[in-house]
Length: 202
Image (cartoon, rainbow, N blue to C red; front, side):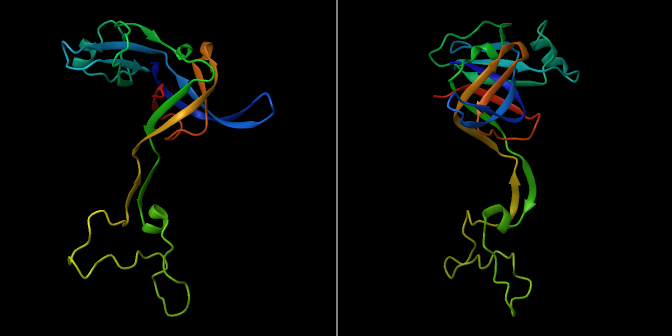
């Protein structure tokens, strides 16, 4: 199992040998440093914690935990059930992936703020003809005769986006190890410069 923390750079395209154009996302993948190794004996589960990027705002407990490894802007854990985990201090870069690999990319989707039902849930809204004042983008009836309250889970206005999203089985189109770049087929969640968790697809 391969894993790494990355950052979304932007989108481009690649051409296959038959001339097919493939939309591609460019990711800065690593380099990452293994900061901690969890085992069943000490932690109850097996995982690897890796750090990515640099920061000056690390607090004292983090500095003590990352002694001599650096100060990282992003830290994440990856489960390593049944896989030999790398040792603390190991550097992981984009070269761990190869052309044609399938990966799962996890990130935070773009936030859109508080939105109504037309934008958030694709409601049609009310009719725009005469006699229908101020209800063009209204949600319509939300209640019921029984049980006299709004049912839990009813689609209504609210905060849109900003959720943890995973996209599975994205094909690795190209790997550029000297620039720490990973190119994957299709789109990934989040805005530019957003942090992403990249790991082998199950």
